Length: 349
Image (cartoon, rainbow, N blue to C red; front, top):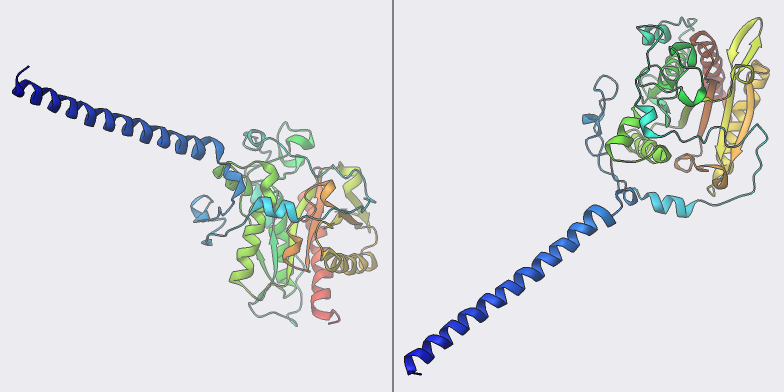
């Protein structure tokens, strides 16, 4: 073989070696990219890190909620780990009755309303005029929100007859929270009412109904940062029990019964319990039989905390049940607003 042929052969071999090197390098890079792809889309659980309220008002109706939320580094798994179990027994009914977790598709099912303008039914309830003696003068000190915002009422849903189906995007518990807010304002107590559609936020971040308190907890956390004057926090729900268990007759009129729920799954729950006991005592004095009392629920009975670790004056307030009407709910919000306002103005420090 001539020297020129040997040189050509070596050159070809060198080029072939370089091509093989880059081919192997490309295969290795592709394999690494594929591993990253698998980890990101299949192995990385988006539910482990719930800093999810960036630009939340782009996901909610601007008429219902216009605040701009900042990102929060909230870790759901850490919350679960920190829940302290306890042996508190329920004294009221079945402990699981309000821990029902409906599938997300059920919450988005279209349900026809019996009345076209359901909002006006709740908004037009007349409240007695109060003398303008006491006022917080524009300062909001009470915060109302709704972790299960689509809990609805059967009297306003067409062809829906069971509590498990009583959910609606408009005719829901947020209308009751707004009634309570108006009643408190009428008593001179500045109140902020959040009517965020929690279900829409859950769906936007691919979370299930069990994460409702994580979403509402971030909303409360933001409210506390935005307004240092807030002192009292009420998560408004309705009961899933039927009318005979959620209605009281007082002076010939039907009222939606109230129930306080205190989560005992955190170390400072006794402060929330003291707050609930004070309100329960005042309610029983003014409206005997209106309240069913206080239900204590630990971590082994459901969420167990219910965001009540965020404030010593934070509780769940259930107002009525699936069968109660706007009139009954309105009477109860007026009664509770009277009691809560009296507590706010004349409580012992």
